[in-house]
Amino acid sequence: AGLEEIRRKRMAELQGAGGGGGGGDANKAMEQQARQQEMKNNMLSAILDQKARARLNTIAQVKPERAQKVEMMLINMYQRRQIQGQVGEAELVKILEEVSKTEPKASKVNFDRRRVDLDSDED
Image: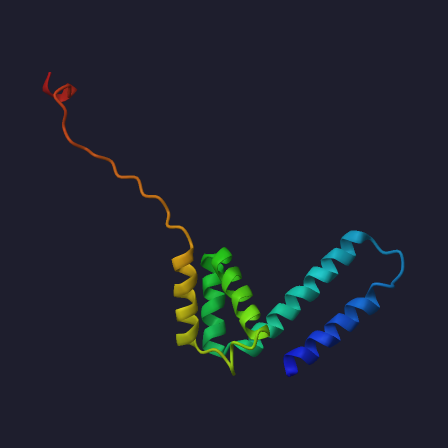
């Protein structure tokens, strides 16, 4: 319930700010992006407990794409009411494992270093 109130307030602020003066489009875009980031952070802090939030921030520093996927996944699950209460670190790890299963594995190149009859070392 608290999250929906925050959303309504933010939407009202965004609509109210839209009727402003002749400021630059770049400033408006940056402000809107900052507001969206703030909304996302507020939602995530409502969804995740402190340890899970710290773990997600650590992942964001190493693999920002994966952290972004997990954040969007958590927000969507919360909006669909699939999450009850706050998500702990153990539950976040399960979600991270699900995301890592869907991501393609990096291809690995193996070099076959066998000797061949045409080797120049025997000359």
